[in-house]
Length: 200
Image (cartoon, rainbow, N blue to C red; front, side):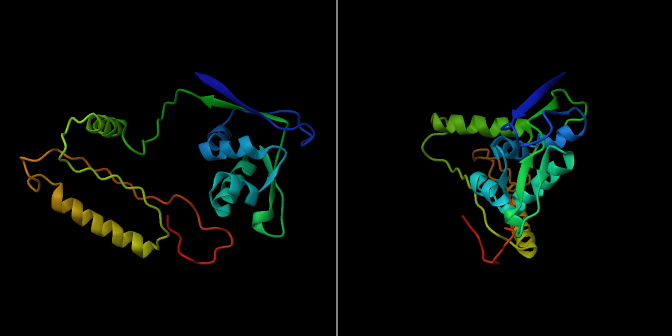
């Protein structure tokens, strides 16, 4: 089963009226962040403009625009600086075929059963199922880390997991707790990186 995703751009921005993508390039174009870039592209924007609108680094924007340019749906012009490079739609309209049923599903970032259990637990705790005395920790943190710091963090986190979660380490009288951690890069350094630490 297939469906079509379409975007239109201002007239006169390209010599091609329409561009139809029905091959493997669709998987590249339909990446959520790349599709969002196409949605805001209009008659064309610079790397810095897209970076500011989407609140991601210009290096990350440039990476995804280069991937889109390889598919032929955009044209990436040269600029004096990388951030000044402009991206233009390659056609007045693009139609991309989306495969709704795939024979080779990709591994989920968080298994659906795990996500279900955690979401259910959050609802139950909000309803008071666990009573007034229980511990819950929800953290969302971002920071610039070196590869050595990432390795150190992972070692320390694994040590804590090994101390509390293996069979026989917990308290059989206590409540059952779940922990699912993901440490992953979420953005690239800016193109003009000053080397300063970023956190928030």
